[in-house]
Amino acid sequence: MSLKIRLTRGGAKKRPYYRIVVADSRSPRDGRFIEKVGVYDPMKPKDDPARVSLESEKIQAWLAKGAQPTDRVLRFLDAAGLAKRPARNNPKKAEPGQKAKERAAARAEKAGAGDDAAA
Image (tube, rainbow, N blue to C red; front, top):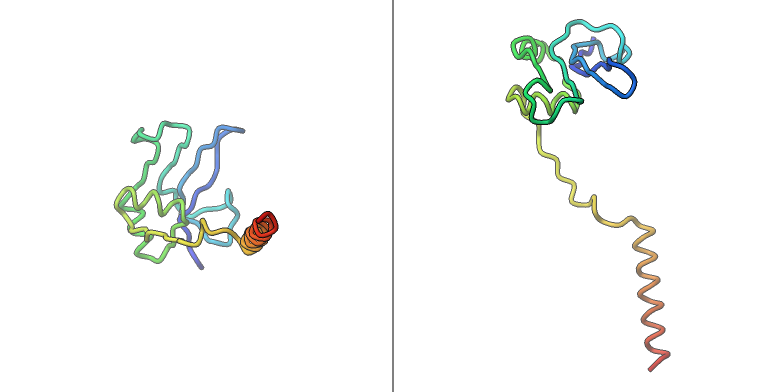
């Protein structure tokens, strides 16, 4: 049984409220869970301490048992100092794609040919 520490959505339409739970990875997002270990209220201001509330002892116990946090929950745990989130670095993200490079090369070639004809 693979355990995940993840968010389950609650609240009304357009007013999300999330519980941070430990659940089997095969269960549905809002389905059965093993234990509730915190809450996340995205409607509160970012500087509000009640925006994310975690039960650190329970979370540490589940992490010791092998539960894997999802990306979003790992951000919360990193901010609380309960887990370390590795820094991501993708230097190729801003690089244009293959087709864009081909178009730019064609444009440069066309502009170069136009300059030669004008001279």
